[in-house]
Length: 511
Image 1 (spheres, rainbow, N blue to C red):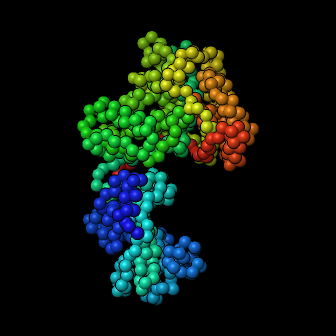
Image 2 (cartoon, helix red, strand yellow):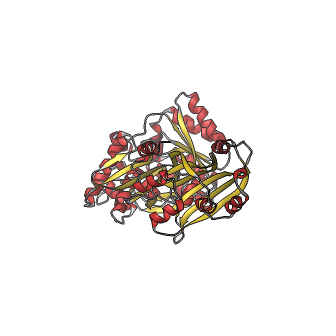
Image 3 (tube, helix red, strand yellow):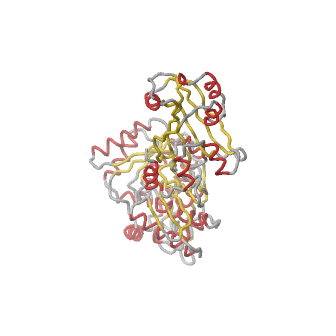
């Protein structure tokens, strides 16, 4: 293959690849020796798997042998001896019948580099690179390299050729954010369900208050590095402009010199009810602060980016994860707020305090169903709804508060899914959540009914929708099929996602 062309294609996907990374992708020399030269440290091999297995179709094709022929299957980590940091993850297949007995004995001994075995046996061999590509990190790769799932992995596959035949087939992988020549920050955020605002009456002297659940997926992943000019890539023009505005504001507010280059690796749509605006803004702000060594709390970052002025669920999800209730804001003369406004119209108002946070049970599953409908209320339209429909009736606020206090909180603490779910159902008809649902298409309310009738313990709409969610512990695949069928029959289309709650906040890693 043309390795230079392959690397150009990889750079089109992930951004600049460093000279060291290019060398590791294209070298035909001993990888362990090269790693010792790069790191200046002793490198060791740890064998994770080594066994003789019959060659499957892929392995047989890679080695030019018959399917079912015995091959030595080996997985190793190449790491620094001093710190144990894993530098390379390698998988190899070796046809047993092409090995001399001595070579086979040495190969089957754990933790010996293949290159060293070849040298010891004076084997004339060459490396032939077959592929070089970018892959998303699996959960296993995330564990091995201590990175986030879906971070880009650089991978190459090659054969060691001896006597005109493949002696060994090897795939080597390492994270894109390893062997770079510049410091980089990676931020991986959760998303969140906004169950409801609590008090949009204000008669108690406080207003807002929020209930939320942090989700493991979907999420946002972005990378940032110092740059002479502000650049944003990896996303659509609207998102690019939004990130640019947040980044420019943070750089100015913190009095930071220079600028940043931001690459979006993973994103989910805005204005569907899952809080992408807050997560994106907080991720950008946290990345810039980390690059400059500024230790700021999520609440400080939220205030700088104008988030959390009504609901604090997005900020708390980014910070802590889990099931969250915030306590709203002081309301009236001398309070933080004197009228009813969404977060987008509440710049300068601090995020409210978290008054309750609890782990979500690991065995509770969450189904998201997002019909292809116009985006939920935002901007001026959302602000207008707050003005027109607030204050909500006090008796509904009292009923909602009682529902939360005596059913929802005991449900989460006692891990009573039915109690918690039925409370979710009840809340859909109370207070400001009832207002939010009143603006929805009958398709949304029909989808909620479908989920409940399909066996969900509870179902609701997140924020202004159109995303709806359902909770359960069993039968969730059937529930997902029911949601898909409903959306197809209504000819609206849409997407579904089975996920779980996330009991921690954003992951921030400096590479």
